Figure 1: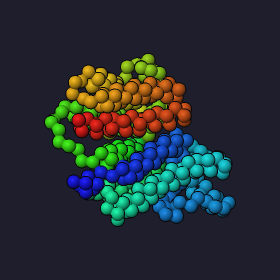
Figure 2: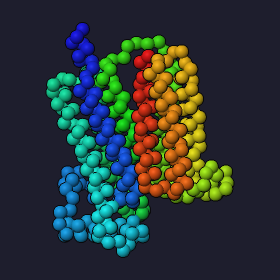
Figure 3: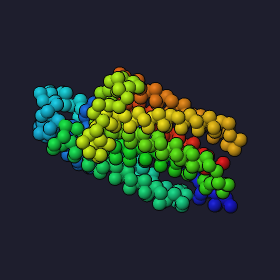
Figure 4: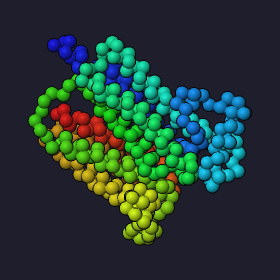
Length: 343
């Protein structure tokens, strides 16, 4: 029995996964800062290995700057910027990519170590291998996103930004869930409960809202219609229709901001109602009740932060805080969903 318990749970593995999750959270924050400072297109090549070394001489800096001058963003937006100004955006993107490389190492090296020592619960081996593949895919998707802004656009394609950010948040949620699984061991069987489904619906709504927010960021929709709750005094933005269904969903600034607001209202109502219902429930443990209220409070705080960010026309500090709060809210909702499935 002792051998079974030792193979089914591992505190060190849980701690390692929590550290990786913290790195992914940092990656999300740095990625948000990179976007808000318009730094994401400053490095025009993808060099997974040699790209870890920044320019080390004046000639190398001039070469990087010359490559940037050939893309539309420089020619149409930043023409005439100095080398020092270029360096300021370059370092953001370089730091973002370096952090991605560090996450790969922070995951891979302990993963191999724990595998060799057979300290990973066997039921988690394939899941962890899948997370590593997903992390590698995230790097490729990141370059695919950047490539969309190097030839004809002055920024990346909003739908590619949405996929890139969505993968990062999916990784964060999966790491949190798996860390909890490693720490607690295999769940004991319980009677079916509606709370498991409700909690997953909450996670799904939060994730959907994050994807819609990525479209707002990708289209720079936060810089228009900065009144609230109306859109320049109207219920529906004047430029809602983008000419086609896809253009409206992914590229119309008015449409993506309206969708983001409507989803926020739905999420806010659902999270608060779920939190109150959980608090009154005779079925849930006290810990689950507190988690439900915590998620509801986080959603309320995130909604208020979103309005403040919009009205202030997306200052960098508020924009980063809004993205960080989204990540923390999702992580907390994942913990709640994991907990109610182990009543």
